[in-house]
Amino acid sequence: MSKNEIIASIRRNKPSLIELELPDYQQFREDIDTVSLFKQQVNEAGGSVIECNRGDIEKILSDNYQNVSEVYSLIDEFNPLDNRSADDEPSEYKNLDLVVLNGKFGVAENGAIWVPDSNLSQRIIPFITRNLVLVVLQMSLVANMHDAYTEIGKFSEGFGVFIAGPSKTADIEQSLVIGAQGPLSLTVFLV
Image (cartoon, rainbow, N blue to C red; front, side):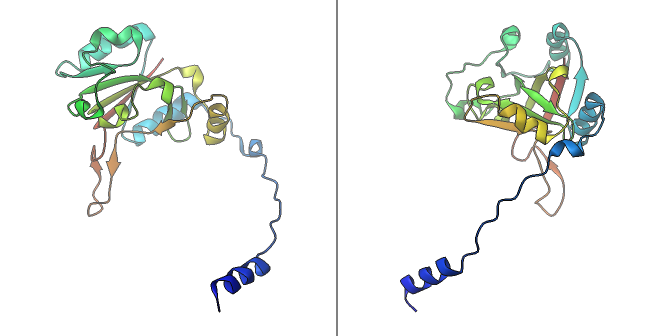
């Protein structure tokens, strides 16, 4: 059988596509406490949540991260803590100790935080640091990934990432390793 005969046979025997209507995900909606569930899920993923007012963040950062030398903040009010430049080459961030970023919203069902491209100066930033701090507004929490994708659809960004907990893997002899390919810690300030 020639190549053309094989392709023709495939085309003749290809099943027709049937349009299926997606179920309305609202039927699965639960009445949940998004704040409690979000905190629980972040903790289970290996991160920690600190509920606070925005004005308290700088003091908490100063108290908890005293021994860090390289700090990078993309939140204007925390720039005094910052000693890195957005113009650095990605390889120059290799010794980054702490990064502070705004998360657009958090997802209660899995503790993930959406960080769009506009909240990053370079895409490597949340993955190369030793300690990652994300600031999320409590009122921006959504219940589940259905709601999260609805939120993402409201923005016109080409890139974004869900971050849930510090980096972890269990590929190596099925032993959990924290920080193997990214941050050793994730702290979420729920404002």
